[in-house]
Amino acid sequence: MDCAFCEIVAGRRPAHVVLDDDGPAVAFLDTRPLFKGHTLLVPREHYETLPDLPPELLAPYFGAAQRLAEAMETVLGAAGSFVAMNNRISQSVPHLHTHVVPRNRKDGLRGFFWPRTRYDSDDEAREYAKRLREALG
Image (cartoon, rainbow, N blue to C red; front, side):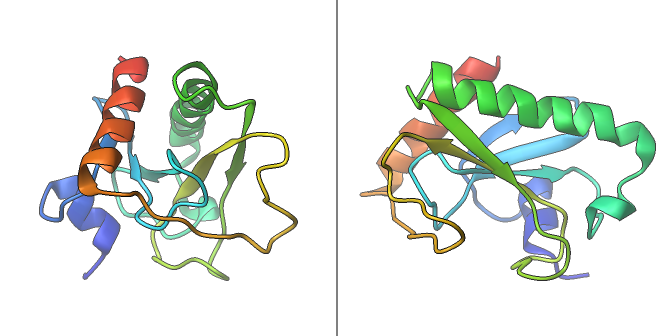
């Protein structure tokens, strides 16, 4: 199977990793973020959609999403966060992933017409990943 997210989890593809502990999920920065700090949370094992995720992984997986949402506010100074996922439709990589995006009032995000941004440099992306990683312990 050729899955970009499985390759990131296995360490065979570079990514700015934010969370990689003993839990069932790994998180890394989105390469085309809505806003800087936009993180993708993926199950460590390959599951394509939320219905495919075993019930025993739901609580720990969404626990990681909850921790990321909190880090958006405490570390990045965001006023809140946007947490979302797609199942099959609009899923750019067919591996379950949850977007955790820092949000601020009047940040320009309207409906589902989402502007994408880029990090100014790899160093800037590395710094965002480091800050979030440190907050997650």
